[in-house]
Image 1: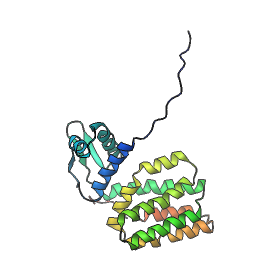
Image 2: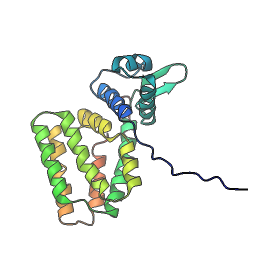
Image 3: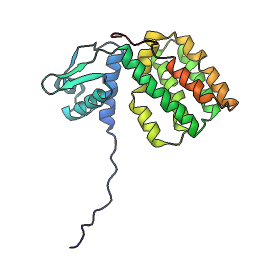
Image 4: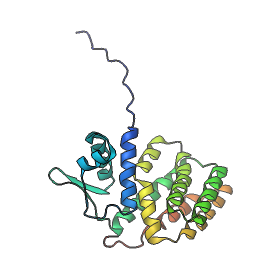
Length: 215
């Protein structure tokens, strides 16, 4: 029997359209367009954005995986009522990933300083959106420096930006967000062997201390 020769597998590319739709929904969740219990109608959103339902369905499936919405065959998609426990669990996983990252590699301090400066500018300018964006970029620099693509992919799959937005808006004062990043940079500068522990405690500081009801 002559074996079948299979050609090279084409790489699977992320859909830019799906990503844009996903971000549109995330922005709506973060800015209050949809509240817990609200339906997100696939057909209506597709018409509003001028796209087919397929990429909308893909984007909603990703948000379901992040536990930000709930989907069912008969009822469609609804915004989940997020709890303090949801936020705490995400941050516990994130803290473990970032602690692991610094055991694998150390980030360039100059890049961390750049992100920290931009974070400070965002706070001074009163932009929570930019504050979250630059704060996440700071931590992505740390995770990326591990050199482990699987770790980075899992970290990014947690939906870091939306959870960061919720955490800062609900539990932190913006100026604290700048101040408590500075000790991390200093620890990396002196190559502190305990920087992983410091990083883990820093990340967990953005989660509610106790589990509880809907946030």
